[in-house]
Length: 347
View: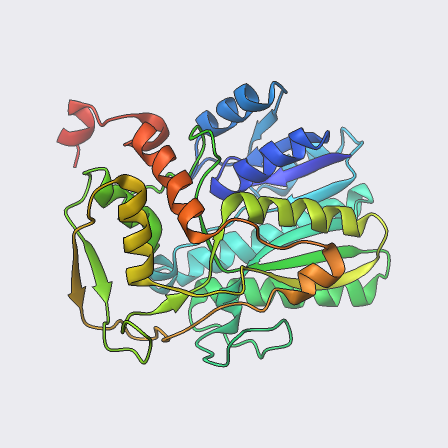
């Protein structure tokens, strides 16, 4: 199968691209490199011994997408590309709606022109909002509480309407929870620009000495240790979920939704303890007040993906932390290496 992967140079995209290549697929990656780097794809090529056809481009440029599709031969699209920082989305909502929603509309229009109607969409558990009704199931009410989550929710609605208008479409919407970890080689992993928005990459940067300590927001939740509980999933398990969904769409038409998570929750202190064990030294942390909007507990019911796709997460929290530490300790400053004096003087 020839697969067009938007955002394929990013964290989840690069790991999924690796799995696609290992599974024998041909991959064309389309990425504007706004929050990613071609170094990830070079390493994917080294790990797989196969070529990644990379095209630098933006989904806001519909003509550029058309030009790639005009080459023909594509069987499916996996759509990762999008801005994803919750805090930034609150500060810059127009940018998020333009990039995520308009970019997706451009992609869908180009797909229709090319007669390409098989799509796996990267959605998010943020569409469930602040629901405390756990475990979260695919039929749980959607109520995103920030512009980033609302862009995902709106795109899901667009895809449902598109499928209702044309039954030839096959669409898989994957709502995943908290991706962490890295490829077991330590050669590709999460490389956030600036301050990490998520817990585990922040913990990893403290462990490697890039930051002083982890701030734990809230230790008075009604949980066993007082800290928030979330469903963390290994990025390689997540990538395998995309491969399974792609295979499902080969023989099914419709629009389908699946949660991708472990079905188990881990607290913030659980994560810090597991990462301390992986790194071989304690991770400095400090308690801080709760953040507005954070819920005590959130985790998935992934039974739908198991029933339909035969997929389930295989790696536990210890493995997630071990693989993430292997990546971070081998690449303390990510793909680019340590900052130069010029980099430092520009700050």
